[in-house]
Amino acid sequence: MMKIVISDPKTGRSYQTEIGKDKETALVGLKIGDALDGGAVGAAGYKLLTTGGSDKDGFPMRKDLKGGRKAHLLLSGGVGFKPRTHGERRRKSVRGNLITDQTVQLNTKITEWGQAKLEELFPPKPKEEKKK
View (cartoon, rainbow, N blue to C red):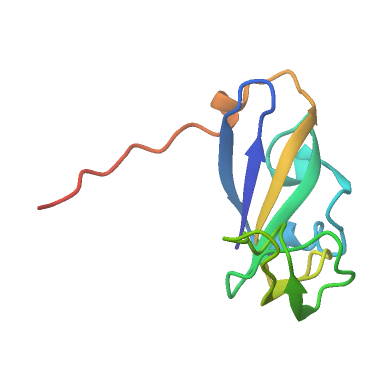
């Protein structure tokens, strides 16, 4: 199962859905920045742009790291590390820009809108009450 997060730049809202292993194979091999058809994730008529994601261990994907490998990079900012002081650098583990079978979450944004509204395609789930 792969989670797909679809962001709508017009409204600022995001929608989440899950796709099965059979549809997941259509996404494997794409890179961050590639366009994909919304029909593959249940949003027929929409065009989506991949913007990021994370792997099964929670490591974020970086656009500037080629391939689907995991690496331990010295980062000074950007995806995977937010420096606390000016000039701080740290070695962090990140995943490459290629979508593989290790990817569990994929972030996308809409570039072309379809006929149906996203609220109809992905209805919000009812919130569960917290027990005290």
